[in-house]
Image (cartoon, rainbow, N blue to C red):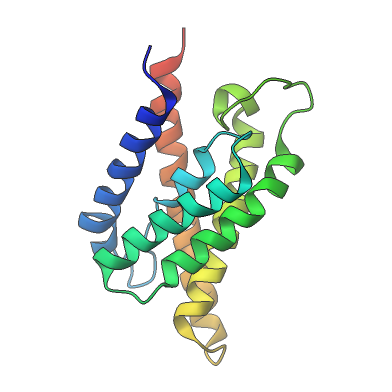
Length: 170
């Protein structure tokens, strides 16, 4: 059995490569861009040290920023999301889980996991796009970008989780 860090390292590199080389090039209707790298923060183990979660969130955000030539916007949104992740897990995790776990369909169930992923993704999208626009002068355009990217990202998270869930089913 492999060490869990191997799985998270591979997930990190897979999501960074997909984001940089594929998803950053997608602009559905000129608005929606899937930001699937947030899935890495969502999938980190629940019992992981909060400082380590924020460091890993900063690392994935910084990596995306370096390849995307953005000035720390993804890092800011990722760290902000990593900070609130602990509270979202407390809000959505089932009360009957006592051992350490990683958020997934198998541990939360589909509905609870998707609620947790939706709130985490929405927070990330709002921070990212508000910071990117640096203004609230075009609120309709901003809301359309946030909403469409949120929906597209959430659909991709559902697809990714479905693939891994089917792969781990007994």
